[in-house]
Length: 154
Image (cartoon, rainbow, N blue to C red; front, side):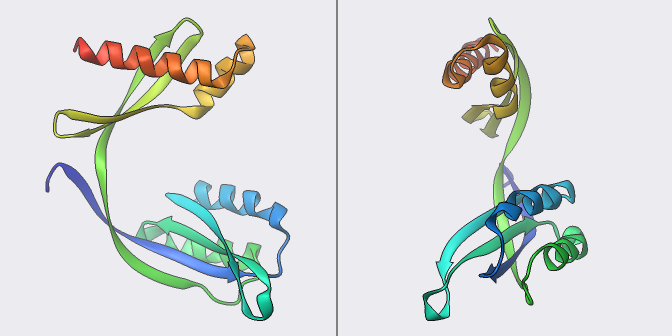
């Protein structure tokens, strides 16, 4: 089991049915700025078939008070649920890959010495795609190909 990072985390969640959906992006950004690990919305139906969303926030226990304050102050919810969970995640490292378009940071996920996943950082790829006026997927595919090639020779 020591090939994984094991953490005790919390999920804070609440159902919201009377809220401007444009504000979710703002709240998500604020939660991320206060150490939220992930923020997501799940569309649901509440009583009387009212459409709504469940706002869920994955956090470390020490970040709970700040995130509770943000959710209560920035949404219309009157109550927040808390779940304690265990998360198993892969070890990861970052490697800067030189492409014909520029540098792209790639995240490499490993179990022991075995590489299980490589992903190119979206913001790096987006910036280079805009700068060079090429499709975003071209930058992403190029970065992943070059990362795989470079890692084969290590």
